[in-house]
Amino acid sequence: MLVDCARRAVADGAADVEEQADRHAAAFAASLVGDVINATGVLLHTNLGRAPVPMVSSGRPTNLEFDTVTGTRGSRHAAVSSLLSVLTGAEAAVVVNNNAAAVMLVLAALAHGRDVAVSRGESVEIGGGFRIPDVMEQSGARLVDVGTTNRTGAADYAKAIASPRNDIALVMRVHPSNFSVEGFVSSAPLRELAGLGVPVVADIGSGLLDSTCPWLHGRTDGVPAFLRNEPAVRQSLEDGAAIVTFSGDKLLGGPQCGIIAGRADLVATCASHPLMRALRPGGHTLQLLQAALLSFAARTACDDIAFWRMLALDAGVVRDRAEAVVSAAGAGSVVPVSALVGAGSAPGAVLPSFAVAVDGDVSARLRACALPVVARVDRGVTLLDLRTVDPADDAAVVAALASL
Ligand SMILES: *Cc1c(COP(=O)(O)O)cnc(C)c1O
Image (spheres, rainbow, N blue to C red):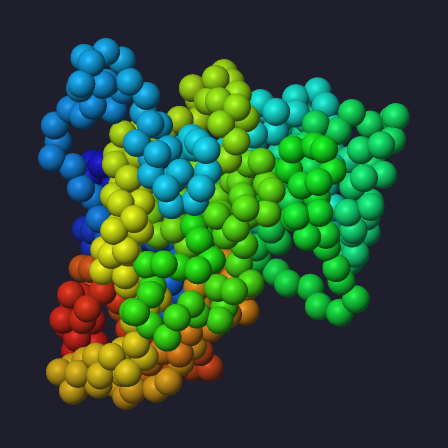
């Protein structure tokens, strides 16, 4: 790599050829995947890897597909499946690489060569090229548009199911995660769709396990208002969804993965589809997901899961930390700001927070620190929101500010 940097510096024809080679080497070093400090105030920042999770592995082999009781082959999905059953009421669950893969697998396994009814208001793009009509086409299922962009009722789905021109295998609900529409709009309640005689797949996206958030009880002032508009796994299943698909690294706060939960027979059909072999996650992902699910079960999610820790943090505590950072660094001032959930979850929802404000745009210099600090710049002021910074990294933020 260094020889390559030197050659490129020579080819550049720069007068300061050694410094130029250093710059190429530094640019390569900065391109390596590594730690940063998220001071953006966006809790789930897709560019910063969404939910932060620690790497935990002894480095030993694991019983990933081995039953230590019988000494025979086991299933890599068994443990998370039983945890998800307890946490959400799902009969069974399987895990794939991300939620895009979960949706693709569900459609391929349950509707290949058949029709899937989707409301015109839910034929959405989630971001990063994930568009419902395109995923549908790739899965081999056919999209049947029902209703209108702003209003779709249960009768619209019923009409599509009854039509002799269609062969509807599934009704699919897609949560329009990253936008909201206001005005003359309505969609059919899940409960009504569940009565139409066709399995309903609900792609809820962000993966709130239970809308009552039992792991928050006694921790904060109850369930934050912005979570009330988020669909949840347990309640979607209670309302009659046969399958729910969701991400592991959004509101669940775990590693990148996608989860298919619901009726045991349908989950088994997904699990035995040839695509499953291509989409299955590695052992580290399953161990991290298992750790997150155990924390929800033990109701210690607000201590153990970084995302829920950041979310449950009292704004006054964030302000005290910001004040301590300002006085230790001898730079900046404390200002109130609004943090965001991010990752397309709870669009428009804000959490009260506090930031260290520094005049001018110093974001590039903060990113150039050994442990890069990613801040945001608003109207010529650099803001470091401490809600998304691990308190253990406050000292690194102080050092970064002092270095300015
Ligand atoms: C985020 C999201 C996806 C994609 O999930 P990834 O885990 O990012 O692949 C799919 N559907 C919905 C509704 C989403 O919100």
